[in-house]
Length: 105
Picture (cartoon, rainbow, N blue to C red):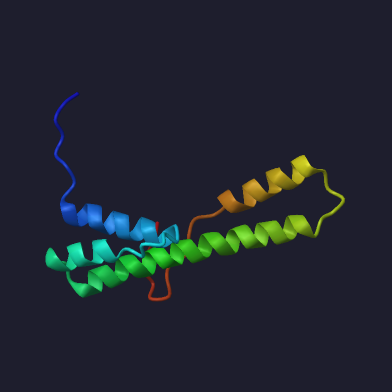
């Protein structure tokens, strides 16, 4: 295995913060916020990471809920068909921009 450069600690903190928010992690990214601030990352960049992560989390939840609701209102469909339909709906389409028009794709 070749030695590859490690990600900068601020990038790791941003990725960790975003994934924690998107996954509803109970630690709420407080450690990462402090690391980013100590590293001198501008607040507007931290705010953008938070907004994008929340948007992805909320969009995923909405898609899953909508797909579940559609399957739940189709009682006569076979279970395998409902599971396929749910999987297809959750996987479909790219994300939409955030409220402030930040791209998350």
